[in-house]
Image 1 (tube, helix red, strand yellow):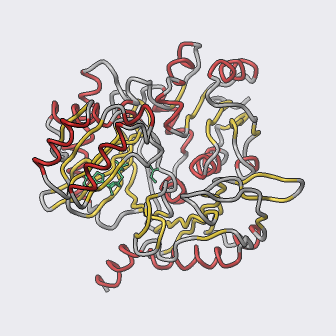
Image 2 (cartoon, rainbow, N blue to C red):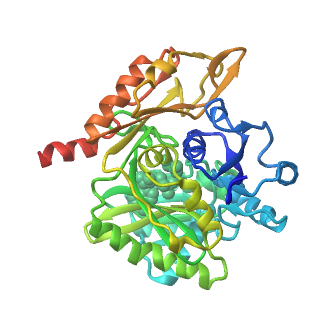
Image 3 (cartoon, rainbow, N blue to C red):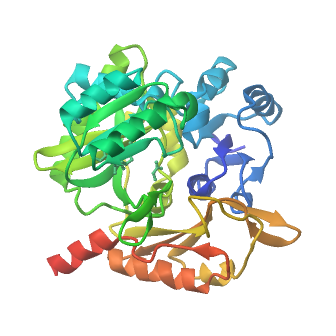
Length: 432
Ligand code: AMP
Ligand code: GLY
């Protein structure tokens, strides 16, 4: 066995995890590679094992059986549920924060309090555990105003209310159980005006390695209309994030957060994803996620020139200072194909074809998000099903390549947005 070779277990089954598997499998340091539960795209890089990711004991047994030397956790739910803590206790090195540190995503109130305590720029807010007081504060602040269920609500717990009536209804929804336990507490927050961008970094508890920027499209319809989804597309880098804004984000938001987490005895180790609003006065924090974004991760992995596994290993070992990252100057753009009806009810089991031809171009990758095998056929098995990701010298060129691939995919029940990247492309045409 080569020195430093690792047996890796990846947790998750979405487009984010396929992109991670694709990148990790390219590392000379990869030994045996498993994924729980994985998907047919991931199966091209790793051995997929169909297990319940909520069954932490079974995952620990698997790590023992397969001699796993590094675990990478993709999604937030197992992190918030304490999978990292349990794996570490069992002696396995894991990339992904403890449950205490994952509160940065698992409790919006926790993050707002942290911002307050350490002077991190974010919208004014209050936390409530009952409707009358929350409503009184919303009335006092006036619309537009933002109502958030405190806990994890699969991206659905946030209402940006344009009127007071809408805000009051959202408060009732939360306390009446629309988001289950996640809505037992509510954050009422100032509406921030500006353009959104995402910033990613990797932390080892003490040090931080800045990665790069991205922008995503949350709304289901062209022109950013219709209900919010997990994300219908993304591109990287985010043209709005100049070097100066990245520096301010590091100094004013990321570093004080990590210092604060350390001071509170809950150091953060893993991927920290800051959702930012670039306002007239500078970057403000909208929210944190404690993992890569999906589909942002697909665009990021296409641009990363370095060995992801080596970076992750350095983070787990507390050696991040030895690392730097290089990114291609090209833009990467990901278009999500979803099943008709998503984010509402949709069908599963519809047949998908011609992916080989659609991804023949060397700068185009098709990441599986919600697919399954049925007999020999590839079928849809989720709301967001594929992430068609392409590199280009400009966002426009990346967009053209991605849509060329979309046109070649044979899937009658699928749809996508046709304007992914529009803001960046408008900026490119403006800049000439
Ligand atoms: P979140 O789930 O916290 O990312 O919120 C979902 C979306 O709601 C964000 O991507 C923003 O578009 C919007 N949003 C959340 N908080 C605010 C805020 N304070 N001001 C304006 N928009 C917000
Ligand atoms: N695309 C948004 C997220 O991953 O939270």
